Image (cartoon, rainbow, N blue to C red; front, side, top):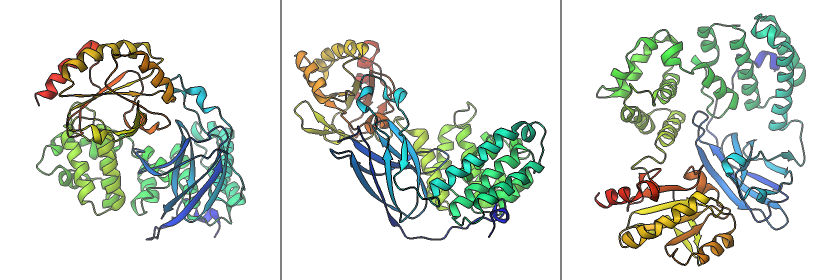
Length: 464
């Protein structure tokens, strides 16, 4: 079937599928013995990452991972804080070449700031492979947009879209990959929105109301996020008139919201309405007029009771995204090497409250605060676990430093190449203090530093 007849109005429906093994092989010069990790966003609204697998690059730079997939996913391949994105299909074998990099050049800087894109190429490129197809498609699409942007955006020359469709059909008319066809369709939808080829009601009817929700398709969700951005408060002429804050105060805010939003004819599809509600409430979460606990209750209800699996995933991710590292949530687990090169996990430290201090040997502010931990350790060591987490990649650099400090007698552990711990605790500056209760829940994040009130935080948690 010709792409021209597919783009814009024929979408591929999802079927129940069985997980298949997908193999990722490759070579990463410079990353020898480092951990390589593959994650995927649980959803494409929050982009909350789920780990799919990890492996260690061998001494020659080779790596191999196998993951079970039941659908095409957007995967993130990362080494330390450096990453790249790739689409992975079930049952395929991929052979990648990652461009050489001096990974340890970034030891002495903030890795969140200094992270770079991994440059990845297919070792055995196939013109019909999904990533290759989308790469060529995006090149054709971007070139056309650059040539005609003013005519499309300023002059609204809608007939140019027909020219683009013909050009795309010449390149991709024989392609039958379902993910690609949906991707192309919603890429065109974005231009139809830009040029006002259709009004909002027509766009919604064509691309959303009677169509399946393609939770894992990058361009579907890109268009969804654009189309429904601020929809509840600005775009929708009907929903924005509702008193959403009052609806959230009702005994059953989920049902009240879902019922009230039926007045919008674009959202007659229950699955779509529920997803739009979730997105809208996430946007309103930080607004002063809205009760955050009520918003979270809607997410929890949706995650537990929704008829639609994709919406349950989105709601759960939104709940985790908005409550990450907030008081009462589970502190991220870790297992790291202590000064004696023995594994110490957070779980093994519980039974007492824990003061975590993320630090580095090259951070002068860290060293000043570390000196102030000593009197607190002397005073509270019977009731509090003090744990200093070195973000230095070199274990021996940490060890050399603390051996010079004979009064640093509390627990020290080293991140090494487990950079996901820094991601889990969102460590963007040093030092960072975190106070965890004896059950392993976040008590305060960030906690005060020793020079500015940490002892008061400690006294409060001991009175808990």
